Image (cartoon, rainbow, N blue to C red; front, side, top):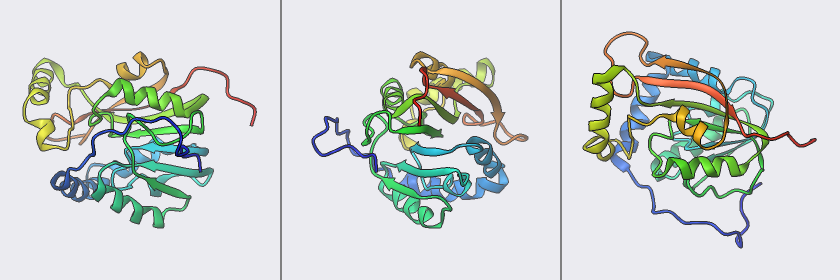
Length: 230
């Protein structure tokens, strides 16, 4: 286990507790696995991973079933109590070892440079401080380690972008567990010092009505530096 020791310096954030949204998310996310093709997106997100992985913002654990056998361990961070309980149940069904841990993205309770990969899956929209969260991602990732990301954000043209920005300033975060729809995850990763690899823009769902959360990006980035000999 690569958790911080009790004597390590860390910042304790305000507790995250969104019971109404958590129940809503847990219900719609399961249906989206087949209806919106999310299961296939998760397969692509995690394909080829190996070694030690930390998943930041694991939600109800829907990624766990898609980790390849080469993954030696997953430490899954989830701050919301109801979603964390569902993630614990999903971890019991996973084919790879998964340890579900309470914590926030801005203060990950793990040691530095302890992981081969970090998974960010629909989490940067809801963290309080994106720059600080990505600083933590960089801290816990070994030099040369990779970030797999699947995030929704700004997109859809001028009218949709203006709508997203207005929603972020008003009702959306309050209604949807702190979610923001106008953030730019690729730009945030670049600004945090990661090297961007290939990434692809996705529409969810592929056809039909476009919503403020329809514009997503699936890709990979790396922490600069040569990987250590293992």
